[in-house]
Length: 238
Length: 252
Image (cartoon, rainbow over all chains, first blue to last red; front, side):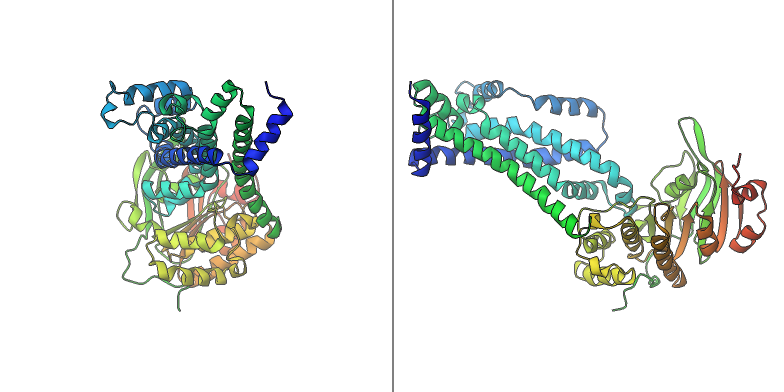
């Protein structure tokens, strides 16, 4: 077992020297999770908005379902996608198992409910406030929805960042469908699991630091956005 | 450029006046709010002030006429036809509490112009001109949410007027405002009125009603009790209820 301080020093050296293995892992993690969040946004934001605005039978069931899916266990999603993509599965011919694409699919399934549920809540709250004003202007339901999405852009960005936080930090799904293959499907989280089990704490720690930094940065972006608005308000005399 | 809040309609555009309700009935939770009301607004120029105690159904009546609520009985017509979205921009509506879009003051006005299908390149000059007339042009680029309550309501009034509607429904627009802000709103309303825009105004401010009313409608318990010229209403209301209301007594 390595000494903890030694491991920290080695980890910082890895980051400081821009270790290519480490960079490759970070880049793949970002690529997979950002792509998954982008797709989840394309699906989840309109889905959340439609559920918020439209009235249809079974709406409550759909809302409950979306909210419940926010808590999907990553390993279960991993298993599910694994079964779909494995050779004997319905999408086996696509040969996607153990590729970054498989990881993106799994993470998209994890993130979409989060984005959709948060978007639904945001848009529904905004609708209460804006409904009459938009209707007296003669806006169609579709135009109203588009306006509400834009009005809620800050909260919706937060929803996307929450989704990103979920995606970048999860390990179960990417491990099962990606397989943690070196130079191909190794992400920060799967690498941390592997290196820790091997006893090589320096790489694990280095990746852990980067993971933490990314999480902080995601939050900082949200906070900074809010700060800018508060500053503008002060300038205007409020 | 002759775009202005105060400019009258081009004659080629379809009209929505009179905005009328026939045998309107509306209830909620087994309570009748509007009880068989026949009404029309906008046939003659000026400002029709709707007075009446709280719960008389004034705001609900405006919402029915604007197409925001669907009556349980009777019908609403705009220039003889059922309300439809295509003509919505011909009826302005200012709410008691202004709803600001989370964008700049001028973008709030441009949004309304876009909704009224004004060509994109025409929107900024029209919006600037309208803000100028409401003395909001200096803060045109500020976020609308940073405005004071009085400024927000003036912006809401600009938004309601900028599409040059036939008629504007004002639902207690100044009930939350200080006297100065109220005066500023009334000033914009007067100028638009003088240029031909017709108004219907719900207010609890009897002073304001006296200042602005061409005609007064008195409502009580979901019914229209009285409709008369502003002058004669304040001199000698015809019903006991209106007399009591003007004297500040509780009207049963």
